[in-house]
Length: 410
Image 1 (cartoon, helix red, strand yellow):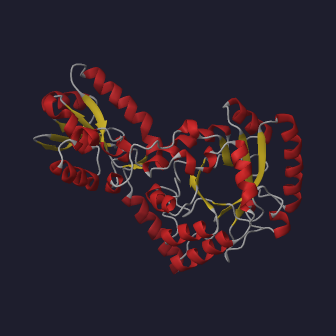
Image 2 (cartoon, rainbow, N blue to C red):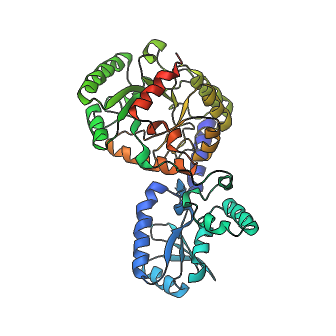
Image 3 (tube, rainbow, N blue to C red):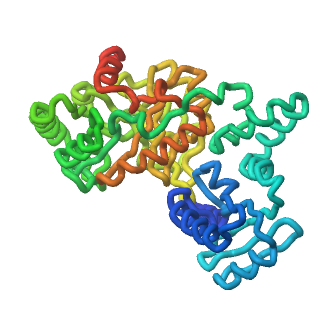
C-alpha cells in the first residue's frame, strides 16, 4: 500500500543520509586505537583528536586531528596503512580509511597548535561568539581556552556559568530504569541488585515492561503482584540497599497508561514510555504525551521522542510544551543513556533546567553490562550543563525515597 511504500522510502532515505556516520560509542575504541598508532609513528610531533569527537557529540561524521606532522610524511604513512586521499589542500588533508571512516587532518606549525586546536574543537557558533568576546577583551583568551571541549557547542554557555561542576559518572547513586528476566532482560533481579551493590550504588529501580508490551514478556497484573512480593523478600535480604518497585508502563494511543489506577498505585514510581505506533503527526504525539504527563501516576517520562540514532528519527514533538507540561505536573524527564537513544536530546536540558524540571540519567539496561551506558548518558547530559543536583539518579537512597513521598500526586 501507499503508506507502507512511503515508510520504506523514508527509512531508506534516512539510512542513506546517515551513511558513514557512527555512534560515539561505536567509534570511540577505533578513534583511540588510530590516535595511538599515529602518535607512535610520529613521536616528536604533536597529534591530537579534535572536532565532533572531542566535543563528544552523540553521532560522529568524521574524525579530525590537529597535527604538526608534515603533509608529505602524513600522506606517505597513511597510504601505507591503506588510507585513500579524498582531498588535499595547503593546510588540510582528508582521507578515507579502509573502514570507510572519514579523517580530516589540520596541518599547523607548533606556535599556533593550541589556538588551532581550540578553533577546530569548537562549533562554528561557539567559536564566532568566543572571537567576538576576545576581540573586545583579550584577557578572556586564556579563560576560553580552558572551557572543557564538551561545552564548546552552544554560544549561550558564555551567558551561563561554565565553571559550575557538571555531572560525572561518580555522581550517579542508583540505577533507574532496568529490565530483568521477568520481561525482556537477561539477568535476574538478585543478579542486578548484587551488581549494583558491587558498584557501590545505593538502590535499583526495577522497571520491567508492562502488559501491552507482549513482545517483551510484559507483566500481567498477576505477575506485577508476584514480582512485588519477591522484591519485598529481596529488600529484607539486601538492606540497607533498596530495590524500588516500578514499571515501564506503555503510553497507549489515547495517552492512558496500560494498568488500572489500583495497580499503578502499588508502584513506588512509574516510567511512562511510548513503544508502539511511533508513526505519528506532531499533533497526535503531543496529545498522547501530554495526557500521559498529566496522569497522576506518571513519575518519569521515558525516552521522550522514541528516536534511535542513525536508524529511526522518532516522532515530532514541541519540546518546549512537553517540558512545560512536565514542570507543571512535577514529572521527571529521562535522559535515556543507551548510546542509540540519548533521548531526551541534551540540547533541551538548559530549557528544562530553567523550568525547574528534574532530569534522570537512566541506562534502560537489559543486562548488567548495560549499566556502563550511564557513561554515555552523563557525557550527553553535561553538554547541556546538567549538575548532580538536578539529576534524579544522583539522589541518595534517602533523598530519592523522600522525593517520591513528597510527590503526593495521587
